[in-house]
Length: 409
Image 1 (cartoon, rainbow, N blue to C red):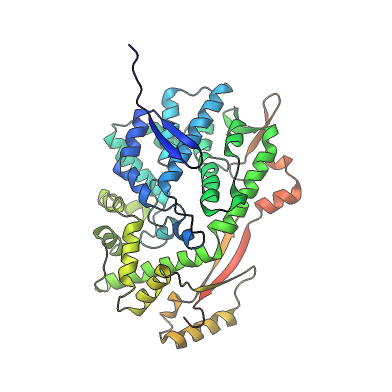
Image 2: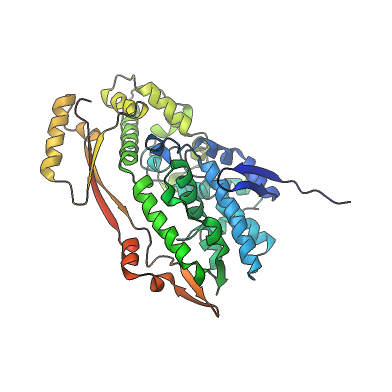
């Protein structure tokens, strides 16, 4: 008699059918912690810029899992020794790598859970799941922490050419409609190999890697650091800064039980208890939207005004430039806003603020991408890139910005 293996098939708009057979992976996907990712947006408030950007962390995690399965198949076909246990560890690590993201992703790391990184929260969730699965996640956790003795395992999960980046660039390009980010992840994976336990790209894949790096550079400035998305994210941070202050001052605010828990408290990586994780697992985008809708009618002018900006998409104006914001211009906007909104200088910083955006598409001295030449010799890809192109990729670009109310708002 032949035994049938349970298989679940997800129909993904990017890759088509994603087939999963591993019982542990299927159980992790079915867990409440992972299902929560269906209610966490992948790109936060970028949908205010790109209406199609409605995809979730759940989509992204499944996509990463699919690419990892492909990569393992390719590497094995080229002689890499990867046991079934190691394969499962890699799948666990990549599936759960973003499980610690909060509502609207990075914006929440700077507001309601300020001081705690999503990577730390992901590890906390993995530890909790590991208890439930009797230690079955041990190897996956080790790989997620970058502590595997097999260096290419760590690189597949977190490096400058990992499964995370290969999925989010292609997926975010698809949902935003920004076609310049549409990389050929299938070809890149087909070019992967292992030399001296290091993940490498076959030399003939050089131009595919170049396109990947250019796509990453373009997507950061066109999508991830888009000025309208940035101002929306900072408004959200200001909203929760104000909400926390009001709650701690005794003001009654509408909030779900999970959201209220975080409005009352401050945290650090060393202070995340099981109780904190229980409440965090109940928190998603829906809690935030429900609160914002209610806060639009709150008597506190700062909270209601900022909340309405998000709900009605009537955002602050943002001015972006390559040089620091002039002190005179900043002070002029402060005075204008104080007068227009009739608020104190202390409170005007909720509506007028400045900052710095930075990004480098490729870091020369951090986990370099390697090419493999015939004969198994690996070389740093930087030695094969045209100097002007390499400089454009590796140079840390800086853009200064100032946000302030539009005239008439």
